[in-house]
Image 1 (tube, rainbow, N blue to C red):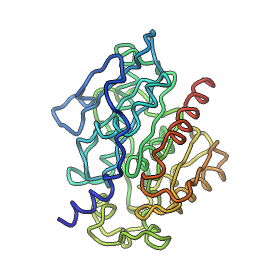
Image 2 (image 1 turned 180 degrees about the vertical axis):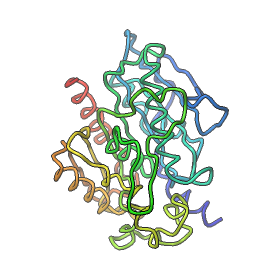
Image 3 (image 1 turned 60 degrees about the vertical axis):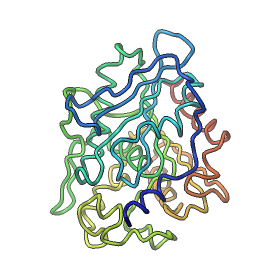
Image 4 (image 1 turned 60 degrees about the horizontal axis):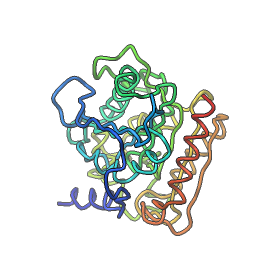
Length: 303
């Protein structure tokens, strides 16, 4: 029950932006890994306006890493504004922390990106531009996808992680993305409590501890492997980071840390701190949806 309560805190954010069918064509429950797992399914939506192909944005749901079948929630949260701005939308399931510990989650997202790149023509996707966005834990995975790029493996002292992985049939394709919008994602797990969270992330049964399979404060190297900042280099794609200054669950210091590290590396990046916004409420508004879409459109035009 405690874990369920934490999960609900992360995902009951009050956003259900889509009010009906706003897409022209869709494919649902595509298995991007070539297996039978629900956690390896994706949905693809195309805009109502008909054209030969569309740039694409992948959306990752927030679930405190506990969810493995919440792609519809991702669509409800962010799908409509992206479709209305001419982007194909792909919503992706991934293995939960109860299915498998890290790095399973980032391996799944990278497999989904490879699937899109390999099958773009089939689904009318212009793979010259693949954007990625997500909120809360989905923001973390979006940021990590952006910064890890072509990195296949990372090691810190005695701990290492296969970041790229070999999920699916398209391992010869790249998993890099062209632009990232991170909505209030956790970044440095070990610092969340010290910079203002009302939820105890340091607990041995916190979402982050469950994700790495051990208490976070006892495992610096495992936490470093999950941290998108660990992978930053000057070749990373542009970032837009949005966070509420009153977020009680993932304090805004997380996005400030990521932004500072991106700036220090020379990665084009913008950080928007929204007054009085919480963990979704006050941030999932038309103004910030437009900011996301304008950012992706500007980056697409640069391709």
